[in-house]
Image (cartoon, rainbow, N blue to C red; front, top):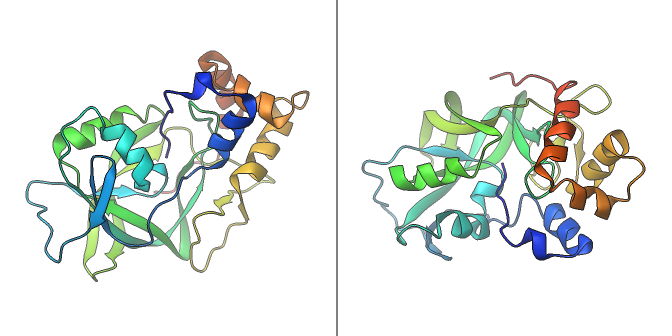
Length: 236
């Protein structure tokens, strides 16, 4: 998943590349509660009344991204539970984000357990999160998810790519920064996958200029259309 950076047009090409390369952005290896731009320990019995579980597996599990996304709202707690999803992996999506990264999506992968998070946003918080994700569709999925506290979830909302999975060398590519167990797909880091995509879409540009030029919405849409023409459908 992705999140735009409002300062990106003020940055140098090197800064833009560094920002894109940071995808999916740091996230705690534990459950937490996001309040404004700060995170707190998850209480033993968090108040989840009236909240629908939302699977978070990319940038939307990062406190810095959540802080930016929720900044316009009152600082209401957002519980985020560390979890694992069975028989799925987190792979690259066949599109470019508004800040020039190649973001992620889900793909079925039998035997794999992907580390994810389950967020419990209010309706207003979920609306704000979805609004930052124009390349994703909010869907209700049947998944086998277990939180680090041992709770099992079988039905929850998730944002999935509208473009399918990026195809390189004839198959999906897992996000190396997300260390799934029993991974079946080959994995690449963000810089590596950007280099592969650049070689397909704009081999005449160096990587910094490629990312910078991808901030143009029209050019990004055209490049995404090329990637989508060879995309692998989501097997959900």
